[in-house]
Image (cartoon, rainbow, N blue to C red; front, top):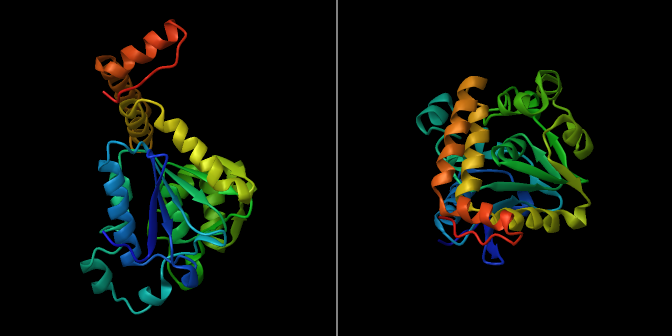
Length: 259
């Protein structure tokens, strides 16, 4: 597939990288970009050689938000009948392999929400996060009022959504939105290092861990623990579990076959 608003490449034959590429619009997210990103992620997800994906933007902007110029003329009928956001933004939620957001510059509105849809965020020290939709007379519509409180708590989510202010990378890390903060010039190196580490493990175990952690946000504790337990039990039927434990006992590096 030919892409116009993203760039796609692989690293070491194992990591799929999607770079948002609308520099004049600071990577504002429109339907075409989200269609292309979804298609690229699904293709990587289906590729047995790929173990992890990275979504990133430019040094100036991961994504400065949804494309307000396109949204400004929409009516209720337009967004409801067209299933706006749900139709293509939510594609990322169907991706089974890990997706890392490597964020530098602005991640605002839809950009912040896209980063939160990824499995974890590695931020450059110049990253800025926020949900400024209130300034436009609307509220976040791609999970900002739902995922943000789960990440940073009710008080800080209320602060960000009601004032429209931005928080820097350090505040985002303290609040739990970001897993780690690194110098700007080390961002992709750090993200690739994490992705390659993930790729060295059993794909089955990695996908199971992702699925189980995501389940914790959508169920009570007892149900979540039972789900985890059954997945844990099921992994004892895999070749990779036998290989991993045998390698540990015999003090050698495991050679996982993703089976």
